Image (cartoon, rainbow, N blue to C red; front, side):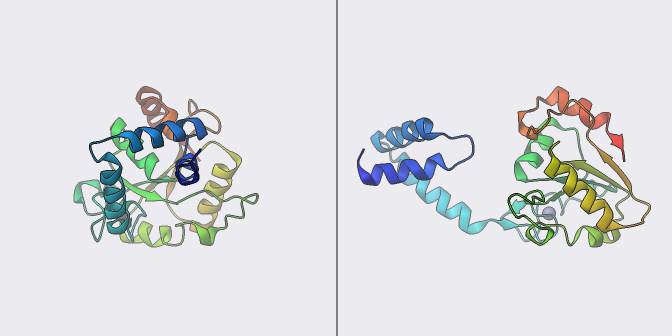
Length: 196
Ligand SMILES: [Zn+2]
């Protein structure tokens, strides 16, 4: 393969769930296209990546000062759902199961990968509880060792409060990402959430 094309394939192959074969197909498809899709993709990617930033309050990516969820008064219902990343927010929004505010950690604690609390968006959760009158925290983190460790760390760091903590009920596949779950299962897992 041409060395430049190979370089491009390697970039695409690094994307989540895109293996080398799919990356090769995408690149060939884009390069053979005569309608300017490659250029449009490059320009849009550059434009969006330059204009979005994590919301300073919750970590959701936005191109506004404060994200659409944090600036919506109807969402100030005392519920805060803690998720690993933006894709989890999008899945929950699509399912329509949750109407409160989100907090995006940007990962999970991991001894193996060397991810510490300082690497994650954890520090301001306590401030949010106070400022936004949060009464319930719902953990929608992966059902993995890392997810559980992160959950326990956050509960311990919040300390003794009157907050009600809960986690999604069983039905969420072990180690599975939220976006692998169908809306029905997610609704059940959310509705039947377990108190901690
Ligand atoms: Zn926000």
